[in-house]
Image (tube, rainbow, N blue to C red; front, side, top):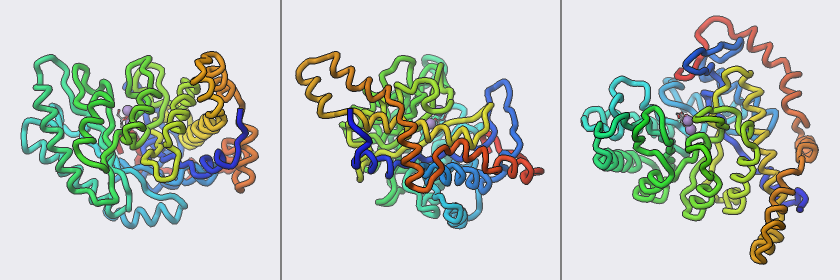
Length: 389
Ligand code: PSV
Ligand code: MN
Ligand code: MN
């Protein structure tokens, strides 16, 4: 097995994991949304919380916005506000899942007025990107049907392709479109972008600046996600990750909590496929909710989990692995991967952090910082933001 040598340290030094603004608001299940003292009331307060995660870990320099949840009148000003806090605004996420008009579809709707409205919403999102300097427009399309015969599967694909083409045409040369897929939910018979193949078909039709977004919670149980990662990297179309953990469906729990070994396997394929190299199109983001745990430490734990599994993936001796694979030495090849996975990299990463002027233990540093108490005292009055605002 390798050490965390200079090339591995370069990967760790460049690692950046985007935080979702919505992770800092109250979230819940359909049973109960628990509120937490200190929960942000505004996007500015969400940015301030996100900045704590970056300050203590050095891993989260950007924050994704969701439109219209994070509505402000001046996005240039918001970008400057973020910069003063030491972070930048990142991916802009569109939203066509909370408007009555979209009950039967948005970018796929048969009613041209409604489809136009959905396209225009995305064009407005690109206006926001122009003002914030964001590179990525992320589209998670909630469209789908519940009953066989309800919609024309093929016609919906055709309208989707046309809608996406209109949105893509509005992007500048520096901007990208990433199309996320999800197997089911909110609809249960068909989703219009249910899998990586459908997303891939659409993004390749659009052009070079369109990519697939892989949300780790959006697959059927037992799907081999690292295989999809390898394939999309091979095809040059893996644009971004939405990281989270799932036990059952789209649980949006802390990444690496349910299955650290799967996260390791995914990150090993990212490494193998050049996804950590300079110039790679792959971006990393969290897409999580913190229903019962404190949100800021929840996000700190999440980025640390990604960092730890990245470090373990970097320990795999790829040369020896290739040799074992080529020699047909099944058990040695498997053993090389497992040796790296079972290595506790936490002491090495603590030292690595200290060398960079970061706290050895960011979780403990956050607990000791008094920030949680301060926001609980200061943020009184107003409406706490929740999933959706
Ligand atoms: C809904 O499934 C979802 O969790 C998607 O993963 C999006 O990325 C996210 O909401 C924000 O729109
Ligand atoms: Mn997602
Ligand atoms: Mn999701």
